[in-house]
Image (cartoon, rainbow, N blue to C red; front, side, top):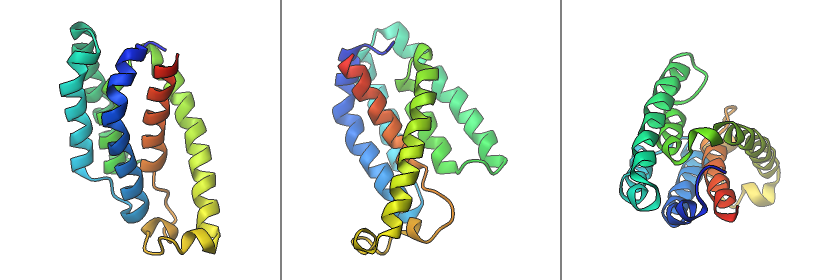
Length: 162
């Protein structure tokens, strides 16, 4: 991993609750709060200069702009929700460019696992009845905040461990 393990360890305690909030909110309301995306950006703004060399930290902001532009186009095309695009953009600075493809592979794996787990939980009354008000139980579309947040968390955990 290109992200130094010490940087991942700096980011994890702050990113973890935000990712849990995003996943929960998207499953419950099919919305990712703008405040959560802003909080993630704020974590990178404040913790980033401590966790990363300043040159790398500065260049990582380009990732936010690129992914936000791509997400905007994907949203206009109806391929991705606006909250998903904003969260992906907010998460992008945490991933150095050499780790982009491994993160795409990780996203694919987490997406498959999250989809299977969500659909299985939705089909089991014992689990579904624990939070019957969740919108994601009845909607055809899938709460992408779950795998997006999971991918960022797993990436940071892997980077911290390697």
